[in-house]
Length: 524
Image 1 (tube, rainbow, N blue to C red):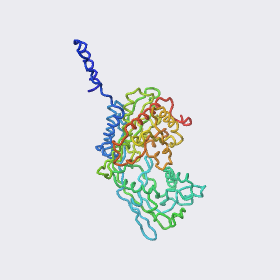
Image 2: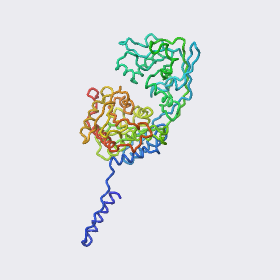
Image 3: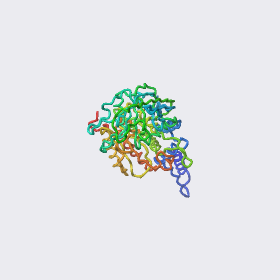
Image 4: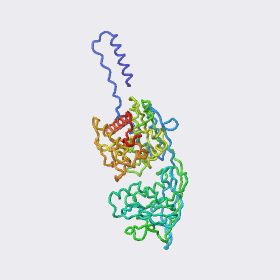
């Protein structure tokens, strides 16, 4: 029985009691109305549905992610939250294509004869270096040149590219640090940005191809990358329909690359032409379109002068789909990753819609394709449905339902460049400390050099690249991460509710603040 029906019954009983003869005994009281659902109840109900087997793991390149997007949109519509996607709706189409390698041939010619290097086990082509960049060519030939580690460090007596003729050559270098460097330099060379810098420096000298050889843990991850390029159900790439003018780019492992390394490697890592050796490569790609969507909603601000600015909340709606069976279960439900974040955003939007609106607008974005390469957030930040410079902060929510009840990880205040998130981090600490039960904040992952590289691994990263202050909230990794055992029955819904409440309070504080949460030197 609903609340209004109970109130009507109470009124009728009162009228009857007043009109009747004085009763010999008191009229029994009407039953009390049932309590309204709590946030914990709402989160549990929504997450059990969102992370149900029927969603088939919500992999972004399948119809199941689109179903997940429509599920979220329906919840927002029922709550009266306004859409802010494409064409007045909740959905924003993310135009990706499924790209995979149909075939590839790589050969080395030397005085000893011709050697074939198998695709996948030895060399992996890189079809795209990122949205908006020209594309690498798919066929290349040239004499081989070894460029050491591809670095220039005069203080250590190294300039690996000095004196080399690279035009129209196939350049090989090792993505590692040479012996003798201190730990700080070794860490910096393993930063993904360092690899990009070295590729750029070599590309400026117009080689025919570049072969990057990896070592250690990075080399161990190459088979998974190769599998994604050959199995069209497992890999998404941005649409590859631009001009192909960059050199061919290939990844490989030093342990499978004797034909690409000089005699005496690794003790002799000197740059030099590999005299008498040449390379030829050809890659055949296949593409088809994928229908996948972000979900975008907005709660308008109440202040006419600030309502055109936004505090953004983000989560990712996709997961990793169908996996090899474990004890008869093959569906990766992704209850924590990132069902917990996605359903918390739904509940935040629902509650914020019912409360007095803050001065700034609140923007909610559920990104697709996070698991496949942050594609949804990359698309939104390059094709925003509100002006990107109107977003004053982005609060990213990814995996907030597990581990110690009072522990919460923050990433961003120390990792984001130029100190752009330091003020935001202080605001987060202030709101948390004012809570009746503050979380114990763990900052061990808040460093771009941390081995887990979590700063680069969720959607906040694409906002930070555009200078937007960000904080990534997570309760951390666990034994069920990226396994079929990440199920909704293992979620701590009380903790999830507390984290969601804290993030909404932080967002509301930011939305009522008169200035952007930026250091004074960055305020415009």
